[in-house]
Length: 150
Image: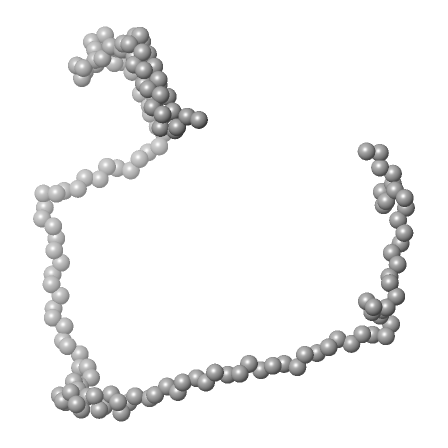
């Protein structure tokens, strides 16, 4: 049994060796580092793609003008709110809090109501399971679907 790490080492090594071998024996492409088209290219015959779609006009933003800053809103007149509470001592606040406190009565564990069980009555015309056994139609020697050939 070959460990997985050893497999990846050998398989990866073989693949990278194959990559270097292909690079060494493949023809090299000529790189054009001049950054401009060569003189032998006919620019008149260059393919131009035109469209029938009329695009909207170009939008030019004038950034030379300063940004328009909106005027500051006038100070709003403070609306009359509720009157501030009179300054009272901490003891008086605690007393007021307890005066408004309504205790919650703990819930008592309710006993589950036991329902009276109903017993189904057997109709006299219905046979019980302890009465005469029910006879099932006798099957033929070959079952329901005829003789089996396999």
